[in-house]
Length: 295
Image (cartoon, one colour):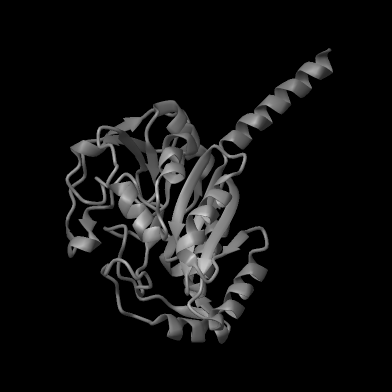
């Protein structure tokens, strides 16, 4: 009887830990170089992950070999390639990647890099404890500007420390109290952790055919009366080296074309993610001159 109770306790504890794992779904288009850097940073700095799924497409087959190289390096990752009709298969692939045993989910674009250590289980536990809407890895007290408004000042909203008992500095704020664009943008695909149950209705019921239109439609349904969580310092940064989406003319660095980056990648190079460790960026998206090193 005693052995059975110990087994039951361990089994229950294991189920609890599994329920706090967080799935990662990444969107990538013609950017194997950036995707490699993202996955390398995820592998180095993130724990508490469930399934990692990449939904990707290419404009022509010259990118396929490079994506195969990424697949071979990160064998634990699931890859879902879009076909010749990407507007029709995008939503089905999102829902296919979605259907796992995990209760939590985080989306990412391929030009994000994780810049410091983070345990996503800690984020999931904080969401459970506070019933907050999302945990924003791109936000922190260091975020004081908005890249897409020409680095306009984005003041910190009113926030308070959450007592989690883990020692981590986690803060909570109300979206409607914020002024800056990044702080008032709860529905995004830039590394925010959500409970699947809280966001599933949109992804199942609504129509969307690519990441940008998906995020745009989702953002318009945001409930600003809810609350968000963030660490003392942001855990990720978006380096907008170039633009690949065909929907929005977002600001970017104009640093390298996808063709140039593909050439570098095929020469055996990668982005040196070590240069971004603990970067003190003041906006979630920021200019940064990346360095290329041998893979």
